[in-house]
Length: 461
Image 1: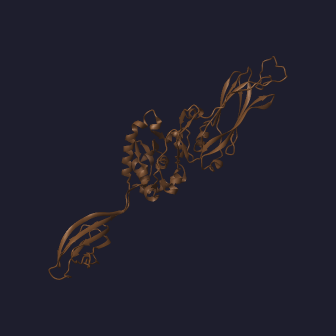
Image 2: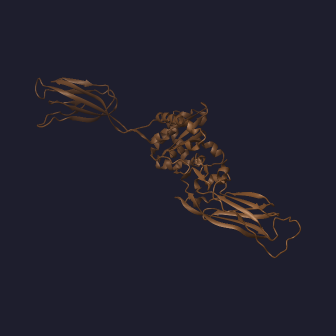
Image 3: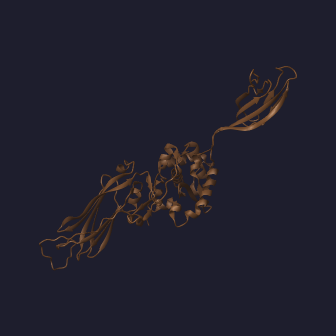
């Protein structure tokens, strides 16, 4: 299937037919050698090649023998002929040479996969053009003669770019969404380091893949990313479609930068899940992506909204926990107890003077010439502490105060829990299921990452 996707894609050179003559007389005997001696050489040739070239797929293309360029040669003559086909991306690849014998009236298709030079393509950081040079030669009188030779400029995308589809000159699209698997890199050191840290967030301090509870292991990875790596969410929608390309970070880059968008996070989680020997999926829908996995014990697919690992559910602030009016007479006090450990803000206000006492801290509420002054204090309170408010006889016997008591408790910044992300992932999987399983992949697609790796769509690293 993969060869079909690429092999039908590219640019086509016009048909070329060449006749050459010489003064020699043709031999009346049958030709038994692939090297022709007659006067006339007649061939018909076509060339197709990949454009644009997604460099992220170079390893997968080469290992799977998916052609970069396809030659189709038709021998119009009554004797066999030897042809030599040469192609290269000038400056970034090795030269590929194939020699074939084309029998009389035979049409032969020859595919070439060009081996790129990793050090060269690593230097390409933006979309650019490179020169694709190809040459078709035929052998006559023990000498190679040029039949066709061209250099064409083709667009190439850098290794951090996902190309979702290619289109031929007739406007036909050939989807490449399964190649998102090249960005899933389970064997790199940084992913192994992530799993080592994730063990500390697992109740058994062990990650054993399908030999143990699957969900608790995904949860451990989630909290390792959230609490140790402090991965933040970058809000950039995914560009998914026939004419779209998408920047994708490798897992090691997301871990180094401690940030990821939806597709980066899905790739990162998929890498960790596959590294545990389990089966991950990347779920892609218009404008979004998330991770899923197969649970062997439950024989079911589950999903996680990976963006929640770095999203803030609630910013830090103060929660109102008490708001009452109390009348305090001379020498009278009241107590408030049942506090949980935490940081509190106590606020008192009244229309007459009052001397409040909170634990061992003392302050004063007093009336100025122009306004009533509020007293407040921020302090740590341990569990079980008691707050006492009293009105001693500062202003004389018989005085009383109507005191407004307001208490706030501080809450730190709160991130989405694993349970939040898991429940949302299941909701999304159910929401998009019909689109993910219909006949139109551009409505949404589930990519079986392990199956793609097993089929030869190898990780980039």
